[in-house]
Image (tube, rainbow over all chains, first blue to last red; front, top):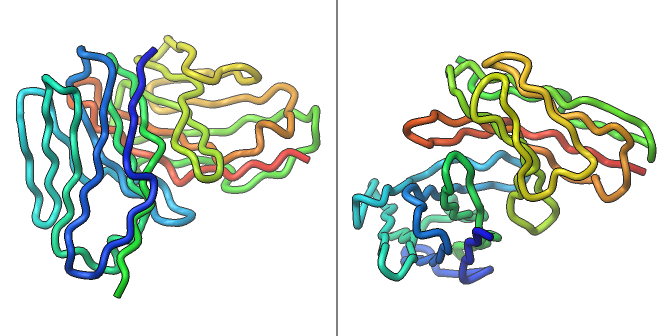
Length: 110
Length: 112
């Protein structure tokens, strides 16, 4: 069935460094790839998304890239800050449904 | 504009008891979803509803039923709760065309 893999499962960076999280998906028909940030005890919040007709999208310190041929997409966070510490989930759609990756726990060390 | 709301926030059940989790959205979205999130894990789809009057099973539907009462409301029912259903339950809604999905605050359920 549909599957989304996500790596790494944990990531620690120094404040000001960049962080990269990578995901791969299995369904070639997927055309929407969101990223969510979840702080402890809170709901997942949509932070950025990309559609299959675009290769890259940027929003301030956050960017996402998509390689449809290889079926993988990545989240890039630059100039990390302590408030970026959270669990990040990628997802891919199949039709109206979504499959989520298992998450990456990002720790930004001051 | 409240977005997606869920009730209750917390619930403790004994094995075998039943309960219904309520979800409502005011964003005029067609699609609604129920997920469960277990500690340290991602989100797993229980049921979804692509439009009013339709529901379909997701990855982990056993032990649950749903009702899409109208366009705004989508409820999840546990008929006979089991300890394995201890989890945080999130409702979400999405626009049919943009796919942007928004989550409710979650219900933390413990079954003893």
